[in-house]
Length: 115
Image 1 (cartoon, rainbow, N blue to C red):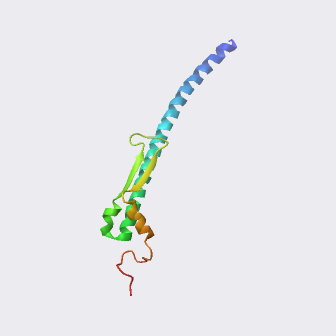
Image 2 (image 1 turned 90 degrees about the vertical axis):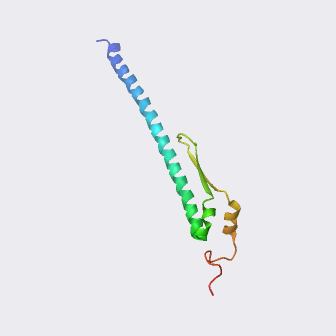
Image 3 (image 1 turned 45 degrees about the vertical axis):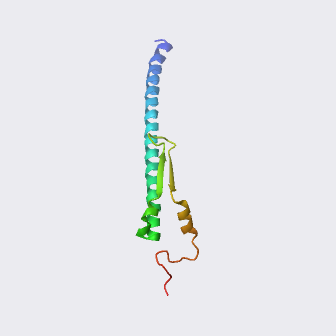
């Protein structure tokens, strides 16, 4: 059997393997996109909830409105991406900043320090 005839079946099998490899890589990228987007979405939501919990704990139940001013957005807004990103912000940045900088209050839940 000539050498060219022996190589031909090997080349055909290699081409078939590359086709399967391409499909496998495409599937892996899609799975990675889904995983990245899901992780960013979950962590962004967890951060927002944690910030809301901290505000409520620091200022009591009456601060629920301030706590609920925390917002979150995940990008891309629809679909999935390996480069997903999350953004958490508050609609009341001046109020949050004022409470963070409040001087001399060691008792955030009390009206006055104990005497």
